[in-house]
Length: 374
Ligand code: UD1
Image 1 (cartoon, protein in one colour):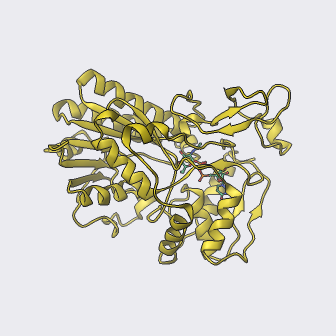
Image 2: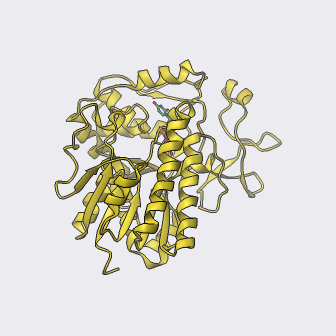
């Protein structure tokens, strides 16, 4: 769309938003970011992150602040709404904070858009709203499984089972799978996407919701203990410690390079057919946690460090979920380009230059103090 040249990214100083800023600048857009530079992600000094592209116009402000949002919307044609608190475990005890930032923040943005209309709003949603992914039973029937029982998990019986005890086989999860909201975070992400989609319909601007799978890559917030498993494993390996694998390590996820995610975001902005739709943005490839631990150790030259399989369950964890990306392929022209090995090598090269602060122990202590791990 020729006229959409000036883009606002809320939360654009963060991991995915800052890569999107690079991607948009490369494609000739002007980029403004509204970001409060929260200490949990950016450190106590609240300075502009050094990785943020110098061409980005940064406005430091909170998405819950109507005046800051109004200022940030001046003269923009499109908005990516990425401002959110993102810790699944943390959302279970900082409920007011998560609901304020994610739900109220979206509400303030949508009200502000009435006074400052844009052509398109793209909102960051999450695979976490699916809960368990989609499964197939022994007779070939595709079904939506419930949660694993606590009693089953205590027996270290990790797989989803049908009524007769047969193990269910995971299949790619499409956007049509019903939400199974298992955390305040997931609930708030679902609210965010629904609020945006229905406001877009009511006020006649295009809205696109993107459900990100397990994005990884440079700039993951290492000092944020609620970061994804690949960054946690890589920082442990760099410190010479073994990765700790929950359950038996055979749980499957969809790890997608942040560069592919950023491309998916730009396509969601540019594709006329995206309006009003929801898309999975993943790699489309299932990986077990055990296999990514092994591959990561290999690309980092740390094969000597054997991961520790702890055989414990993290409360709220699902067993398997990986994306069916056919809708993004056909309507956005999205195609993941970064192989897992290349992406992991890049993550670890970046990590080697970082002070890999291992705050994972602290985060686990916070969760277990509240009875959120078994
Ligand atoms: C969660 C959220 C997702 C969010 C992502 C990154 C859900 C369902 N999804 O995904 O929205 O984008 O966090 O913040 O809540 N693991 C280990 N050892 C560790 C850490 C993790 O074995 O030290 C395992 C976990 O048990 C899990 C897998 O690795 O099976 C992935 O964990 P994680 O990276 O936290 O992401 P998800 O839980 O998939």
